[in-house]
Image 1 (tube, rainbow, N blue to C red):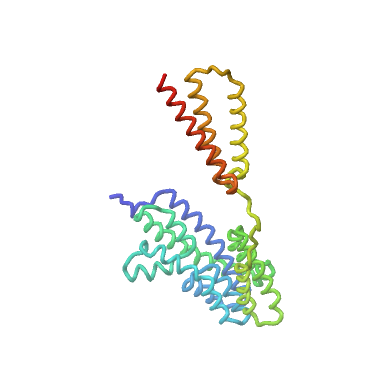
Image 2 (cartoon, one colour):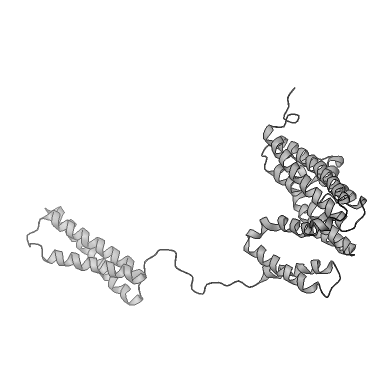
Length: 316
Protein backbone atom coordinates (compact mmCIF):
# COMPACT_ATOMS: atom_id res chain seq x y z
CA UNK A 1 0.00 0.00 0.00
CA UNK A 2 1.27 3.46 -0.90
CA UNK A 3 1.39 5.84 2.08
CA UNK A 4 2.71 9.41 2.38
CA UNK A 5 5.49 8.11 4.63
CA UNK A 6 6.74 5.38 2.29
CA UNK A 7 6.41 7.16 -1.04
CA UNK A 8 8.22 10.51 -1.12
CA UNK A 9 7.40 12.66 -4.12
CA UNK A 10 9.80 13.04 -7.01
CA UNK A 11 10.49 16.72 -6.35
CA UNK A 12 11.75 15.96 -2.85
CA UNK A 13 13.93 13.09 -4.10
CA UNK A 14 15.36 15.35 -6.79
CA UNK A 15 16.18 18.06 -4.25
CA UNK A 16 17.74 15.50 -1.92
CA UNK A 17 19.96 14.16 -4.73
CA UNK A 18 21.08 17.66 -5.71
CA UNK A 19 22.01 18.67 -2.19
CA UNK A 20 23.74 15.32 -1.64
CA UNK A 21 26.00 15.96 -4.65
CA UNK A 22 26.93 19.38 -3.27
CA UNK A 23 27.56 17.91 0.18
CA UNK A 24 29.91 15.28 -1.25
CA UNK A 25 31.98 18.02 -2.89
CA UNK A 26 32.19 20.09 0.32
CA UNK A 27 32.97 17.00 2.41
CA UNK A 28 35.77 16.07 0.04
CA UNK A 29 37.20 19.56 0.46
CA UNK A 30 37.09 19.17 4.24
CA UNK A 31 38.85 15.80 4.17
CA UNK A 32 41.57 17.10 1.87
CA UNK A 33 42.11 20.21 4.01
CA UNK A 34 42.41 18.12 7.17
CA UNK A 35 45.13 16.04 5.53
CA UNK A 36 46.80 19.19 4.19
CA UNK A 37 47.05 20.57 7.74
CA UNK A 38 48.92 17.41 8.79
CA UNK A 39 46.18 15.93 10.98
CA UNK A 40 45.96 12.15 11.39
CA UNK A 41 43.67 10.30 9.00
CA UNK A 42 41.21 9.31 11.73
CA UNK A 43 40.52 12.93 12.80
CA UNK A 44 38.37 14.00 9.83
CA UNK A 45 36.47 10.70 9.96
CA UNK A 46 35.76 11.12 13.67
CA UNK A 47 34.71 14.74 13.26
CA UNK A 48 32.39 14.05 10.33
CA UNK A 49 30.72 11.23 12.22
CA UNK A 50 30.56 12.60 15.77
CA UNK A 51 30.35 16.35 15.10
CA UNK A 52 28.63 16.60 11.70
CA UNK A 53 28.72 20.40 11.54
CA UNK A 54 30.27 21.58 8.28
CA UNK A 55 31.25 25.17 9.10
CA UNK A 56 32.36 24.29 12.65
CA UNK A 57 34.51 21.44 11.31
CA UNK A 58 36.32 23.71 8.86
CA UNK A 59 36.98 26.21 11.64
CA UNK A 60 38.05 23.56 14.15
CA UNK A 61 40.53 21.95 11.75
CA UNK A 62 42.31 25.26 11.21
CA UNK A 63 42.49 26.04 14.95
CA UNK A 64 43.62 22.52 15.88
CA UNK A 65 46.33 22.66 13.23
CA UNK A 66 47.42 26.01 14.69
CA UNK A 67 47.82 24.37 18.11
CA UNK A 68 44.80 25.78 19.94
CA UNK A 69 42.16 23.05 20.40
CA UNK A 70 40.46 24.92 23.25
CA UNK A 71 39.71 27.83 20.95
CA UNK A 72 38.39 25.31 18.41
CA UNK A 73 35.89 23.99 20.96
CA UNK A 74 34.64 27.45 21.96
CA UNK A 75 34.49 28.62 18.35
CA UNK A 76 32.48 25.53 17.38
CA UNK A 77 30.01 26.07 20.22
CA UNK A 78 29.60 29.70 19.25
CA UNK A 79 29.13 28.93 15.56
CA UNK A 80 26.53 26.24 16.28
CA UNK A 81 24.57 28.29 18.82
CA UNK A 82 22.00 28.86 16.07
CA UNK A 83 20.92 25.24 16.48
CA UNK A 84 19.11 26.16 19.69
CA UNK A 85 16.27 28.06 17.92
CA UNK A 86 16.42 25.45 15.13
CA UNK A 87 15.71 22.71 17.65
CA UNK A 88 12.77 24.61 19.10
CA UNK A 89 11.32 25.06 15.61
CA UNK A 90 11.46 21.36 14.66
CA UNK A 91 11.02 19.68 18.04
CA UNK A 92 7.49 18.54 17.25
CA UNK A 93 8.58 17.21 13.87
CA UNK A 94 11.42 15.04 15.17
CA UNK A 95 9.18 13.10 17.54
CA UNK A 96 8.63 12.61 21.24
CA UNK A 97 10.65 9.44 21.79
CA UNK A 98 14.10 9.84 23.29
CA UNK A 99 15.73 7.85 20.51
CA UNK A 100 14.17 10.05 17.84
CA UNK A 101 15.22 13.24 19.61
CA UNK A 102 18.78 12.03 20.13
CA UNK A 103 19.33 10.95 16.52
CA UNK A 104 17.29 13.79 15.07
CA UNK A 105 19.25 16.44 16.94
CA UNK A 106 22.48 14.99 15.57
CA UNK A 107 21.17 15.11 12.00
CA UNK A 108 19.95 18.70 12.32
CA UNK A 109 21.65 21.15 9.95
CA UNK A 110 20.71 24.41 8.26
CA UNK A 111 19.60 22.59 5.11
CA UNK A 112 17.53 20.02 6.99
CA UNK A 113 15.68 22.70 8.94
CA UNK A 114 15.09 24.79 5.82
CA UNK A 115 13.61 21.88 3.86
CA UNK A 116 11.51 20.80 6.84
CA UNK A 117 9.95 24.17 7.60
CA UNK A 118 9.07 24.63 3.93
CA UNK A 119 6.54 21.78 4.21
CA UNK A 120 3.11 22.83 5.57
CA UNK A 121 1.81 19.30 6.17
CA UNK A 122 3.04 17.67 9.45
CA UNK A 123 3.36 14.20 7.88
CA UNK A 124 5.37 15.48 4.91
CA UNK A 125 7.42 17.65 7.26
CA UNK A 126 8.49 14.68 9.37
CA UNK A 127 9.30 12.60 6.27
CA UNK A 128 11.31 15.48 4.79
CA UNK A 129 13.32 15.96 7.98
CA UNK A 130 14.49 12.35 8.17
CA UNK A 131 15.03 11.94 4.44
CA UNK A 132 17.16 15.09 4.06
CA UNK A 133 18.97 14.49 7.37
CA UNK A 134 20.01 10.93 6.54
CA UNK A 135 20.94 11.93 2.98
CA UNK A 136 23.20 14.75 4.13
CA UNK A 137 24.85 12.65 6.84
CA UNK A 138 25.76 9.84 4.48
CA UNK A 139 26.88 12.17 1.66
CA UNK A 140 29.00 14.30 4.01
CA UNK A 141 30.87 11.28 5.35
CA UNK A 142 31.25 9.87 1.83
CA UNK A 143 32.77 13.17 0.71
CA UNK A 144 35.08 13.22 3.73
CA UNK A 145 36.39 9.76 2.88
CA UNK A 146 36.89 10.81 -0.73
CA UNK A 147 38.80 13.93 0.33
CA UNK A 148 41.03 12.00 2.73
CA UNK A 149 41.84 9.48 0.02
CA UNK A 150 42.61 12.18 -2.56
CA UNK A 151 44.63 14.17 -0.06
CA UNK A 152 46.75 11.16 0.84
CA UNK A 153 47.22 10.15 -2.79
CA UNK A 154 48.56 13.52 -3.90
CA UNK A 155 51.34 13.53 -1.32
CA UNK A 156 51.36 17.25 -0.47
CA UNK A 157 47.86 18.73 -0.93
CA UNK A 158 49.20 22.23 -0.24
CA UNK A 159 50.72 22.24 -3.72
CA UNK A 160 47.18 22.09 -5.12
CA UNK A 161 46.16 25.26 -3.31
CA UNK A 162 43.94 23.49 -0.81
CA UNK A 163 45.14 25.90 1.91
CA UNK A 164 42.95 28.52 0.24
CA UNK A 165 39.90 26.22 0.29
CA UNK A 166 39.45 26.71 4.04
CA UNK A 167 38.88 30.49 4.01
CA UNK A 168 37.04 30.19 0.71
CA UNK A 169 34.61 27.70 2.22
CA UNK A 170 33.91 29.95 5.19
CA UNK A 171 33.36 32.96 2.94
CA UNK A 172 30.92 30.95 0.85
CA UNK A 173 28.98 30.08 4.00
CA UNK A 174 28.58 33.69 5.13
CA UNK A 175 28.04 35.37 1.75
CA UNK A 176 24.20 35.07 1.81
CA UNK A 177 24.12 36.88 5.16
CA UNK A 178 26.19 39.85 3.95
CA UNK A 179 23.25 41.35 2.06
CA UNK A 180 22.17 43.11 5.24
CA UNK A 181 24.01 46.38 5.96
CA UNK A 182 24.40 45.79 9.71
CA UNK A 183 25.73 42.29 9.10
CA UNK A 184 28.32 43.65 6.67
CA UNK A 185 29.50 46.21 9.23
CA UNK A 186 29.81 43.54 11.94
CA UNK A 187 31.72 41.20 9.62
CA UNK A 188 34.13 43.90 8.43
CA UNK A 189 34.82 45.17 11.95
CA UNK A 190 35.32 41.63 13.27
CA UNK A 191 37.69 40.79 10.41
CA UNK A 192 39.68 43.97 11.04
CA UNK A 193 40.02 43.15 14.75
CA UNK A 194 41.11 39.57 14.02
CA UNK A 195 43.72 40.66 11.48
CA UNK A 196 45.09 43.36 13.79
CA UNK A 197 45.48 40.94 16.72
CA UNK A 198 46.95 38.03 14.75
CA UNK A 199 50.51 39.26 15.27
CA UNK A 200 50.21 39.67 19.06
CA UNK A 201 47.90 36.87 20.23
CA UNK A 202 48.22 33.07 20.10
CA UNK A 203 46.51 31.20 17.28
CA UNK A 204 42.76 30.94 17.72
CA UNK A 205 42.30 33.91 20.03
CA UNK A 206 42.05 36.52 17.24
CA UNK A 207 39.06 34.58 15.88
CA UNK A 208 37.31 34.82 19.23
CA UNK A 209 38.23 38.50 19.54
CA UNK A 210 36.43 39.08 16.25
CA UNK A 211 33.26 39.03 18.35
CA UNK A 212 34.07 42.65 19.15
CA UNK A 213 32.63 43.39 15.72
CA UNK A 214 29.20 43.07 17.33
CA UNK A 215 29.81 46.55 18.76
CA UNK A 216 28.75 47.89 15.35
CA UNK A 217 25.18 46.84 16.11
CA UNK A 218 25.03 49.18 19.13
CA UNK A 219 26.32 52.25 17.34
CA UNK A 220 24.15 55.40 17.64
CA UNK A 221 21.89 55.97 14.67
CA UNK A 222 21.18 59.32 13.09
CA UNK A 223 17.62 60.57 13.10
CA UNK A 224 16.43 63.42 10.83
CA UNK A 225 15.97 66.65 12.82
CA UNK A 226 13.03 67.81 10.73
CA UNK A 227 11.12 64.80 9.38
CA UNK A 228 9.12 65.51 6.24
CA UNK A 229 5.39 66.03 6.52
CA UNK A 230 3.75 63.00 4.97
CA UNK A 231 0.19 63.64 6.13
CA UNK A 232 -0.71 65.70 3.07
CA UNK A 233 -2.68 68.22 5.18
CA UNK A 234 -2.74 71.83 3.88
CA UNK A 235 -1.27 74.64 5.97
CA UNK A 236 -3.69 76.10 8.54
CA UNK A 237 -3.87 79.48 6.78
CA UNK A 238 -4.74 77.96 3.40
CA UNK A 239 -8.15 76.69 4.56
CA UNK A 240 -9.02 80.04 6.13
CA UNK A 241 -7.93 82.00 3.06
CA UNK A 242 -9.89 79.75 0.72
CA UNK A 243 -13.05 80.08 2.81
CA UNK A 244 -12.77 83.88 2.97
CA UNK A 245 -12.18 84.14 -0.79
CA UNK A 246 -15.22 81.99 -1.54
CA UNK A 247 -17.39 84.06 0.77
CA UNK A 248 -16.25 87.30 -0.86
CA UNK A 249 -17.03 85.97 -4.32
CA UNK A 250 -20.46 84.80 -3.31
CA UNK A 251 -21.14 88.15 -1.62
CA UNK A 252 -20.16 90.06 -4.76
CA UNK A 253 -22.40 87.86 -6.85
CA UNK A 254 -25.27 88.45 -4.45
CA UNK A 255 -24.86 92.26 -4.64
CA UNK A 256 -24.94 92.18 -8.44
CA UNK A 257 -28.19 90.16 -8.56
CA UNK A 258 -31.54 91.96 -9.27
CA UNK A 259 -33.53 93.29 -6.35
CA UNK A 260 -36.76 91.47 -7.22
CA UNK A 261 -35.54 87.93 -6.75
CA UNK A 262 -38.06 85.18 -6.21
CA UNK A 263 -38.39 83.11 -3.05
CA UNK A 264 -36.44 80.12 -4.44
CA UNK A 265 -33.56 82.43 -5.33
CA UNK A 266 -33.64 83.91 -1.85
CA UNK A 267 -33.53 80.47 -0.30
CA UNK A 268 -30.63 79.45 -2.53
CA UNK A 269 -28.70 82.59 -1.62
CA UNK A 270 -29.41 82.05 2.05
CA UNK A 271 -28.26 78.43 1.84
CA UNK A 272 -25.05 79.48 0.10
CA UNK A 273 -24.39 82.09 2.75
CA UNK A 274 -25.04 79.57 5.48
CA UNK A 275 -22.68 76.99 3.91
CA UNK A 276 -20.00 79.64 3.47
CA UNK A 277 -20.41 80.70 7.07
CA UNK A 278 -20.11 77.09 8.26
CA UNK A 279 -16.91 76.52 6.28
CA UNK A 280 -15.50 79.77 7.52
CA UNK A 281 -16.32 78.81 11.11
CA UNK A 282 -14.59 75.42 10.72
CA UNK A 283 -11.50 77.09 9.32
CA UNK A 284 -11.50 79.73 12.02
CA UNK A 285 -11.45 77.09 14.76
CA UNK A 286 -7.95 76.04 13.67
CA UNK A 287 -6.79 79.68 13.27
CA UNK A 288 -5.64 82.06 16.06
CA UNK A 289 -8.18 83.02 18.71
CA UNK A 290 -8.46 86.55 17.35
CA UNK A 291 -10.41 85.37 14.32
CA UNK A 292 -12.61 82.86 16.18
CA UNK A 293 -15.08 85.49 17.42
CA UNK A 294 -15.56 86.93 13.92
CA UNK A 295 -16.21 83.47 12.52
CA UNK A 296 -18.79 82.84 15.21
CA UNK A 297 -20.62 86.06 14.42
CA UNK A 298 -20.55 85.24 10.71
CA UNK A 299 -21.97 81.77 11.36
CA UNK A 300 -24.74 83.22 13.55
CA UNK A 301 -25.62 85.79 10.90
CA UNK A 302 -25.81 83.06 8.27
CA UNK A 303 -28.14 80.97 10.38
CA UNK A 304 -30.33 83.99 11.12
CA UNK A 305 -30.58 84.74 7.39
CA UNK A 306 -31.59 81.17 6.70
CA UNK A 307 -34.36 81.33 9.30
CA UNK A 308 -35.69 84.58 7.79
CA UNK A 309 -35.72 83.00 4.33
CA UNK A 310 -37.65 80.04 5.62
CA UNK A 311 -40.19 82.27 7.31
CA UNK A 312 -40.67 84.26 4.09
CA UNK A 313 -41.26 81.05 2.18
CA UNK A 314 -43.86 79.96 4.71
CA UNK A 315 -45.69 83.27 4.42
CA UNK A 316 -45.80 82.93 0.64
